[in-house]
Image 1 (cartoon, one colour):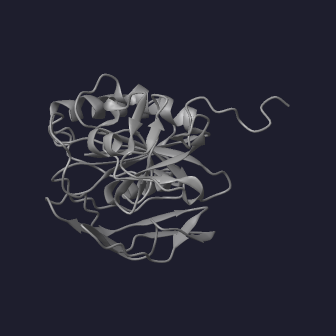
Image 2 (image 1 turned 135 degrees about the horizontal axis):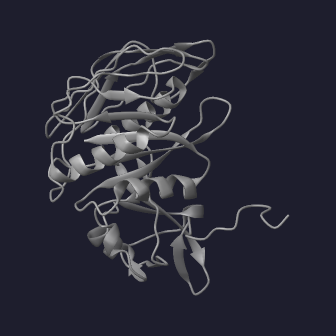
Length: 285
């Protein structure tokens, strides 16, 4: 199951607060991400949650988006993009409106996602300039105990706020879309990035609970779900490179891999590029 929401969060603090509010005490190997939405006049962040059908098992397979969709509004997405690999994205999705822009997750035509480990169907419906909605079967949306809890929490939260959402699950004939169409676009883009693993900043992921203090690069890969560690400036990183995690890491997704960016620090160690308490530029002015 993938739940994506665009609440036009202004920064990572707002986006992570929303993630924690929706997740609650949900057990299992949930993947929670923030996504940069750069279209329109106000770049912002959306979020996504990927929840395994059984919260005690690891999520496998792909989420499929099939059919064609047209969103009309003030901002249009045009162009086409194809991704290949273990999970393939072929085709395109139509977003039409008065202003055209291009993006990696929005294009024209119809979309199909296929991959190994099973597939999940998501079809989209026509939306209007003000909102986009899609009907779903009420009894299907929450397969898995953990998923039901989150979906119920999300639906209650959505009913009180003007945000965009896209929810899909195993066996769904179409997604559940709701909210203003501009924000639905952001939610849809976040859902696509989450399904493909091509982008997103990971907040919670399998292995994140093992991040503690000083670790070697090998330990981060073996215990914490990190696929690759990349040091700024091209500094070499081998299995025994020492990294002080500061008990906080926010890796990114790139081409289906989980990548941790690090930087040099005092004491001849590396630290994450993103630290927990960052002072914003000009914050003291």
